Image 1 (cartoon, rainbow, N blue to C red):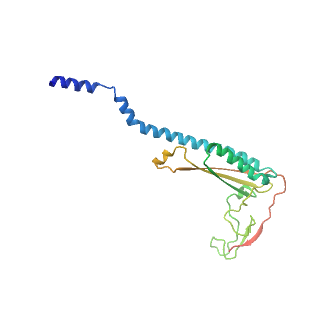
Image 2: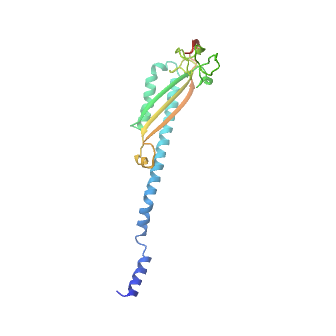
Image 3: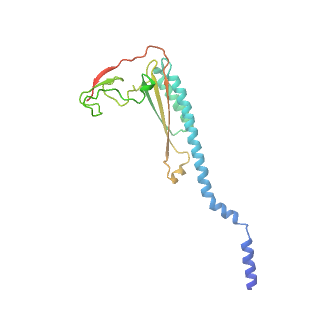
Length: 201
């Protein structure tokens, strides 16, 4: 083949764009796929959190009614069923804390700091608000509470990612979603405001 013919063929090959699209797509496809999977994973997790929030709001409203203590397991099972429809492999954990008032939430039990060390110790007197005989950093009773009590209801769901490939990017293979709400129980009786005194250890 003559030199001019060879140059002509090389020039024609340089102008030929028939396979360029395939090569460009092959270069872009992995990044595009990761972005799409990331968006789908994010959307799935947001949807799960929204459904969980709705389920906990309904469960908390049901728990504020008189006689809810007897239906506590059924209320929790309804939340499990709703979450299970979306994340079948998920585990659900419940936490209820009852307080006399909204202002008591996450507050420690009051004590007299006789030795001024900032700790409840050495027999210092404290108000045993939850009646368990010990000084606690959270004065809540771990139950559904009584009439007029403010109840903090927390549900935590852990489930495997819908798109495990996200683990290749360093994301945790499991997702944990949490929803919480606080409502006051119905005024179906007299609120128990009994507080006993205890001694710090």
